[in-house]
Each structure stands twice: as C-alpha cells, then as structure tokens.
Length: 310
Image 1 (tube, rainbow, N blue to C red):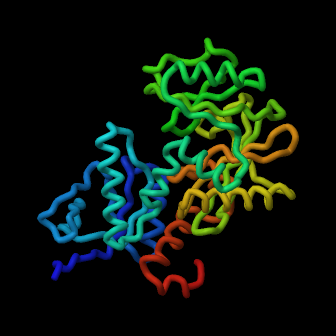
Image 2 (cartoon, rainbow, N blue to C red):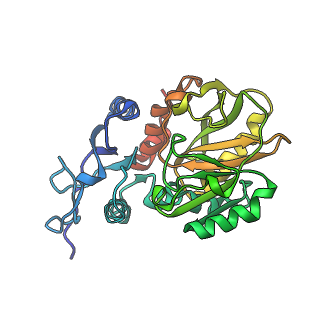
C-alpha cells in the first residue's frame, strides 16, 4: 500500500514577489479563516524522500490544501518546464490548483492561446506564429498589403516588446526575439484616445471589467493607460466573449483583453491566466481578491458553497 500523503491546512500562493495582489490574497484567505504560505515555484522541489514526492518550504513534506498561482518567473526552458511539472504533479495528487498547469501553458504562449480561441470559433485577429526571419518575411510580404501587423513577444505581458510592422524592414533580428515571430493583424480602431477592454472572469462568473484608454495604440495600464468603468449595451457582448474565451483555454480565472474595431466588431486579443487587477480594482465595487479566494475555497472546503458572501 502506498504511504499516505499528509495534507496541511494552508493555502499556497505561488509568486516570485509579495506584490500588491499577493498581499490582498493573503488578507482575503486570512479573513476566511485560512493561513497562507507564499513562495516561488523555483523554491519547490521534487523530492522522493517524501510520500508526495514534493518538498514545499515550511510544509515539512505535507501538501497544501490548495494552490493559487499569481506569477511564474521567466527562466530557461528546463527551469520553466520543471516549475510547470510541479503544478502538474500537485494536480495529479488531487490538490486544487488555480490556474492549472494546462491552462497556464495555453495562456502563457500567445500562439497556443490564439489556436484555442480560433478553434472554439471565438473572434480573434488573423495571427501567424513562425520561427526564423525568412518565414516572417514571407508572411509580411504576403499580408502587408492588407494592412499593418503587430509583432508581440510570444511570452510577455503589460505591453512590453510590442512593435508595429509596416514593412519587412520593421522586423527585428531573430536574436532579439529568440527567433520566434508572433504576428497579428492590427485591429484598426478609432482614436486617439484608443480603447480596449479587460474583463476579469473567475469560476465562470464576471467579477468586473474596465475600459483602458490611452493616447497611443498600446493600451496597457502598465504603459500609462487609464482605467474607466464600462457601461451600456456593450457589457453583455463583452461578458459573453470573455466567458467563452476563458472556457476555451480551460482557465479557472483569467483576464481577457478584447478590442473593438472601427466597424464595431469585437475581437479577443489575449487571455491572461495570471492577471493583475490593480487597475480594474479602481473601477469596480467588489474586492477582487476576496472573490478569488472565496471561489477557490469552495474547492478546498465544500461547506463554503453554503455560506453567504460577506
């Protein structure tokens, strides 16, 4: 008979730094009566001395009651593969993991996200992901007559590394982008100010949404965009698209970026499986960390489903 694996009564928050979101989550879990521990995946080891095969700091070989993934740092292919392997292993051991390694894998790689969105019939801009400058040049030569393209890092967030491609000369050298070219059709919008939308989904429900406005065409809060509440009939369409996109990648919670073209068409740009919510929190009445903690705890503690929201 396999040795029984001990489980603690602590929630593990995975993050590389104790940012504002981590602090809010810790408070929310504490208010719900649960203690938390915080550490990066890099500090968690596969260790076969323990029945679980996993060693988590401060747990002495025990498993956490649940895991919520706030962030995973960049690293070598080997390092990131091992970190995701830890999440896969925790799921295999029946530990609730938000988001799962599978969902994170589908979202952190923008080309994989695009595939699952398109495969589910969700409107998203025409996208091409190839390796090597020759393949990228061939795409630009073929597509540029239909309008500019946007080059994005395959891995990345907060609007960093995005470039507008109007000609072959705009393509960066392969060593600048690890030889991978993720090219997406530019969605023509009215502006300035330029707008897009971030919708936050948790456990199949909309927690909130914001309109992001900026003078430039890159509309990330981290790049100086301003958050505004979303009102009017557009909300319902945004909600429907966001729920469908979250389901398509299998995420428990996500931040979905949606843009509206000049003709009124809505397109999903990205699904973020480790979204921040500082900008969104400034324009919505609910406490997002409380909602996330409560939704996750329904998996850890079934009695939570019967308790009224605070």
